[in-house]
Image 1 (cartoon, helix red, strand yellow):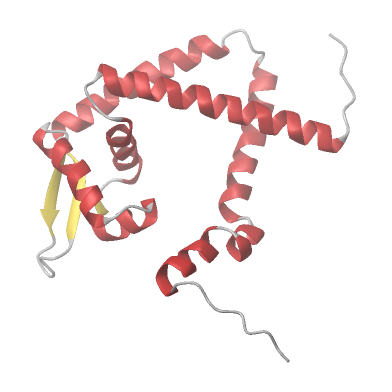
Image 2: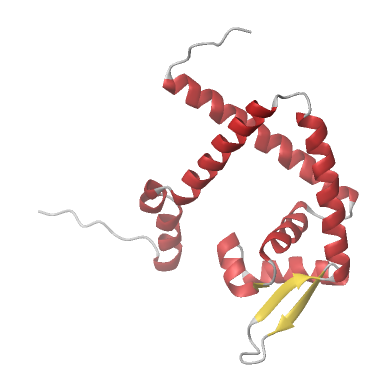
Amino acid sequence: MPEENFTPRESAERLRRAVLGLVGATVCRSRQEALAHGLSNSQLFVLLRLQTEGSLPTTSWARELGITASSLSGLLDGLVRAGLVQRAREPPDRRLVHVSLSTRGIRLMKKLDKEHRVAWGKLVESIPRTELDRSSAVLERLSQAIRGRPDRQKHGNSRHRALRETGPTRKVNPR
């Protein structure tokens, strides 16, 4: 198949659409996996996060996720009842609660991880390794750029966070 020549803008748009399609398909698959294990999508997200991050303090985590502490608490209550996570209070400050995977949660996440690896292996087995390596490098760079993008901090989430914390500011028209 001959290589097509796209403008940089067209290439960027093709990549954006491909990434959005990949994210959408991944979210759908995650929903199916969550349901297959009796979990909500949010609960699966929490388990995945705990698997990668380890023990997390609930206060900063709720803030980071953009949900209330009570919403996070309700989500965690279900996971505790299912025996998938455990809560522990920190001795110096008993108000601080850390959450981590329980033994059962670790076993479930290992099982899911193995299933993911097998599924991804089948999905990409027909793609040449050089293409996979190139694609991985591009996606890693995009992920880093999105997380650390300076204009996001100027105009994006931090602006909205500031509005939530301080309320809207009034503009005064100079005379």
